[in-house]
Amino acid sequence: MTQRIEPRTHRAVAALLLALLLGACAGPPPGPPGGAPDPDREVQERVREPARQQSEGVQVFPMQNPAVKQLIASARESEKAGRYDAAAVSLERALRIQPRDPEILQFMAEVQIRKQDYPQALNFATRSYDAGPRVGELCSRNWHTISLAYERMGDGGGARRADQRASECMSAKPRGY
Image 1: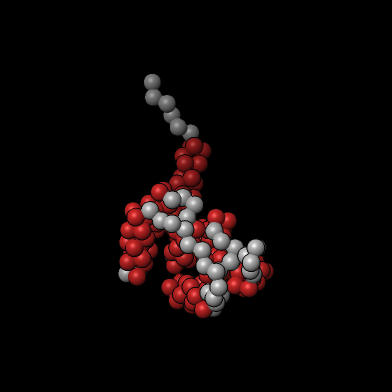
Image 2: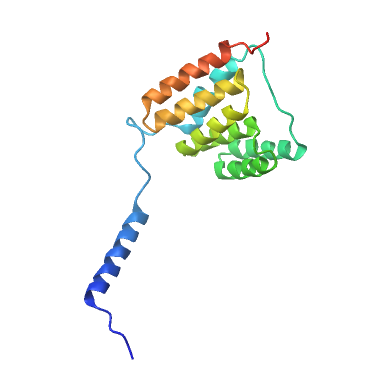
């Protein structure tokens, strides 16, 4: 009792396989016009440096577990060596220990920018801002990262709004002072 497969089923299976093969060959979505930006330089020049230069005033840093400190150090070494996947793995482990640590979340956002995964960078930077201080260098890095992610995803308006928020991080005084 063998069953006979109809020719139309063969065509449907062939079409499905062809669609899967073509889908697997598809590249990432096109980036911004004007050539591919250097994500390493962008993180340094557009996120870390502006925040560092504007970092006068109150700075807030959470206490960290010694294991988390070691994982962050490992992530920094991996980042310097250009091994962003390894840096992300170390940061993921640190986030399992301290899931709402704004410094770790922001570092992960910056690694995601370097990996050109802009939606993830936006996600981590937003989570860092939600968990972190509303003034100071970390706040500014959050918004500069959010701006860069929006820009790379083609949302110029979102990028401009985020840049405005970044400048507010350095001029706002905390309540009670």
